[in-house]
Image (cartoon, rainbow, N blue to C red):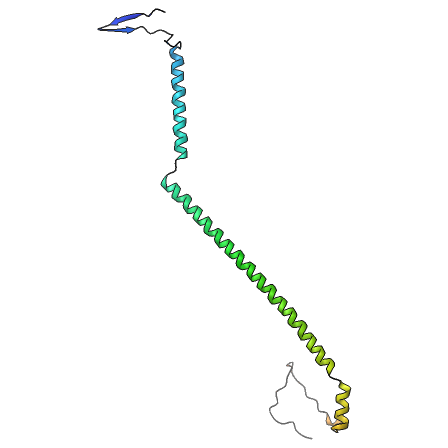
Length: 156
């Protein structure tokens, strides 16, 4: 391949030819440079996207701290709720036991008293008798379950 030169003032320059030394045209070289610039720009954009500013890091740290505190509070509330539920179950079990014991004692007390024996002792040993109709006096009581006595009951 022959090279063509021309003289421009005191410098000798090579004529521009469509084919370069490495066998590529000027358009191909421009296209390669554009691709390289785009690749470099894309690499710079990726690096910028990967970088985080201080304010963004502070914001993310604050968010993580808030979420951690909320998680700890939630776990604490759950454990408190669980312990309260266990305490309630224990108290209910105690209540059932106490009621059963109370019912058993009541039945024992009721069955231990023989009303016929009490009547026989009152009539025969103590000399008591049933009241007669003229000995019974009736009083009216309001809706209350009790009556207040302000003076002695008159004898008639």
